[in-house]
Length: 166
Ligand SMILES: [Zn+2]
Image 1 (cartoon, rainbow, N blue to C red):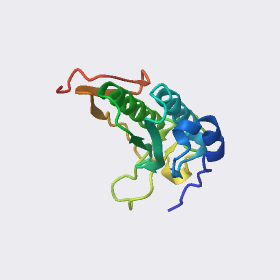
Image 2: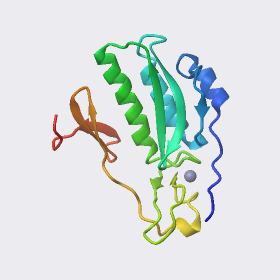
Image 3: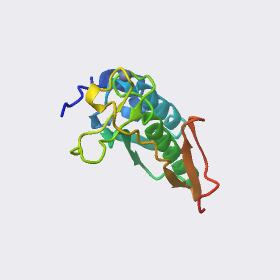
Image 4: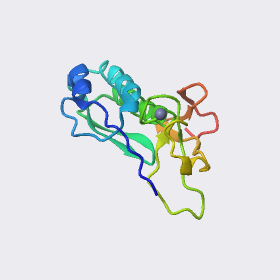
């Protein structure tokens, strides 16, 4: 089973662009293709009071971006805004190639294939032996500020989940 070689994101460049958001970030353990969702996250968090929220870790989990936020006593409304920004970035990453930033998909090993590290990759960066693997396109539901949300990958945004329970 091949391990996909993912070039690391440029942590120095990101820190320089968003010192207030990323100055204390301990891990930039993600690929260079996710510059856009991380930058969007930082732009959104920058609207909150300086020093109130920072990114603690950026990592990859189950093929998607995982953001760990560190918040200092944010009022409810701003906590909700921070959580929205985090989940939006994580969801967006699930459709963006971690290598190059083009459109991508997370593929999981089919039944009978030993479990493997999964990635979100475009067709060009997807190793040949993974081309038959099924795409993971589960809609994920979230409670944010007492409201049910679902990420709509066609719209490319979070929308209120009509079927969810508030
Ligand atoms: Zn790619």
